[in-house]
Length: 376
Figure 1 (cartoon, rainbow, N blue to C red):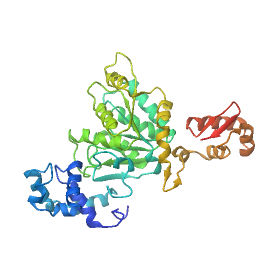
Figure 2: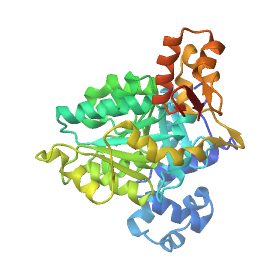
Figure 3: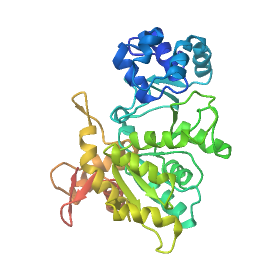
Figure 4: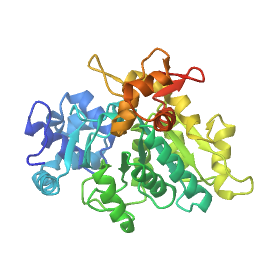
């Protein structure tokens, strides 16, 4: 980016006030919203007297003092750092702020993003699990993430060791999009050995955090970031989780946010599958194949394919090659005979049949009989 993205109104003062408030230790999403409800703007909250601030629920003497001294924070330094490293600053009022994230009870006031966004990011699935994954778990995470990415879903995870990394890699290998939500700043990656993976994610999606770019990872920031992983997605798939796994925190966030919860079963005697089995007993959708996820999310995807009164192209269509596009365009929303598709495309019949199978897997068409297909 050549210039720093601001609010749609282009008011740099608003951005600075938002950033300043979000940099104050102890001012979380709920306190921030309470301040906004009491004072109307972040600028007015920062200018409030100690007596006025103490009237806001949750603000004691220490936090009141921090807010009163917020002018000492070097906001311009943070802005210049973001500009130098091509980090987007996305306040909640910005139209680029993820729509799904606005729905959760405690959305962050500002997001720091390296990478970009795409329309299909509205159709996202979170995949989470243990850092101490078995070979079975790693294989399944990569397989399912790859298949879901090919179907057009963006894969969201946390860049952690184990299941998270396998999910990101599966999406990348499929040529799909993936978002990594960090428990540290986007310039202070954790774990450090995932630097190359993070760079691949940045090129094929984005790195996202609610923390300042140089913020070091701390134990308390990881449970907090889990609400963002699920908040960005239509649902969460848990792959391998022990009974006290952090992935279960994500599943809990998802349920509270009204998101779908999926779980992959594992070997009955595997300690790493006990959390998943508990989720399934409690009502999570059991997942064996990618179809188990797509069938459940299908109805949720339809409203998101409408934007400003115009129908968006299904995200799976954005990944088609020329031949796949040619075959898809030859199929109508009414039953279309395969011989007609061959005639329209002038492609060899075996090639058309193979492409039809690919389009079925991506849930763009379905067979209505042995010789007919219909576009969805």
